[in-house]
Length: 274
Image (cartoon, rainbow, N blue to C red; front, side, top):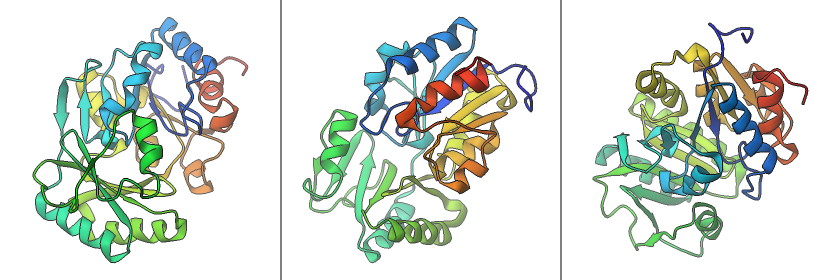
């Protein structure tokens, strides 16, 4: 029994980038062993990310993922074979307003329309890195807003990190409850359907799997992980998370560069010395 939860932890939900994998997107042997140890204890394991679902395909085999995968921060939830369980899309009006705000701030927009990742400039910051991370290329379009009927996520991208804080705030202010907007990395602001956030992922798994949120543990490192921290019975922030994120977690582990995921699982969920 974990203190602060309503019974034993029955499911662990992990963010991917900066949590489950390192800065260089490496899934370490110790992280794999930690998931195996969860399985040995009868604890289910699931993953969530701002990535498209297919951008997590490389994790399915080494981690033997057998639970729903929540991509786009919960905008699309799929089975491990990537058949769709449910999807939440932005209305065309909200998508247009979001693109307008990003353009007003001179922030590069990416649009995820259905299964397509659409960019206007393949040489723009972070496009090559994202392609390497998710293992598939974007589609290039002069106008990323030409088709907005199936938009699951819009991401604003800039290396001006103070600007991205303002963008996050301004999008939240402009859209209110009509959409969810949060930084998934210091240089990304993700805008999704108002039910497509990581707190919503916890509630969806509660509904799909019949496991109370109070018996779930969540691990993450970014501001968009705070909503799942607040919903779950136990939460673990990575050591590199900012102070606001750490303050929302039950526990703070080491950084993702120092096996923070595995240390968090071993120490705070399995009750082992890490």
